[in-house]
Image (cartoon, rainbow, N blue to C red; front, side):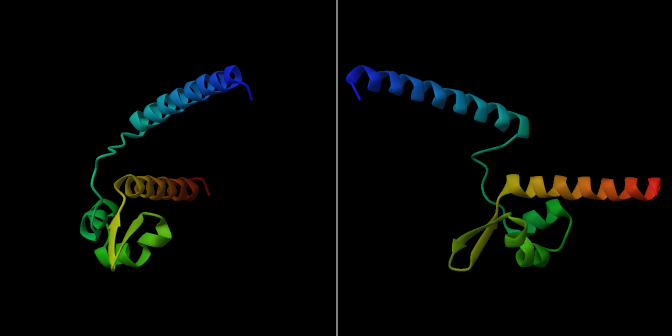
Length: 102
């Protein structure tokens, strides 16, 4: 690959990276993601999900909301928790709508 081709490739890659960064910022804004937000403990997570902290501890990994920090320390990813809450809310609405129709 010639020097000119490498420079062209570098410019193209830079442009692609800028497009990806811009798209990421748009999606982040749409989701109201707080990237600097600290991880939550089981009690905070349980309050958002309206359940007992023990349930969060038992099922957090299965639900994909848990971050294992090692040494038996588990915390929960706020954005993943909010996403789970929305999915559960949508599923409950769908069940209720199904009952009304059927």
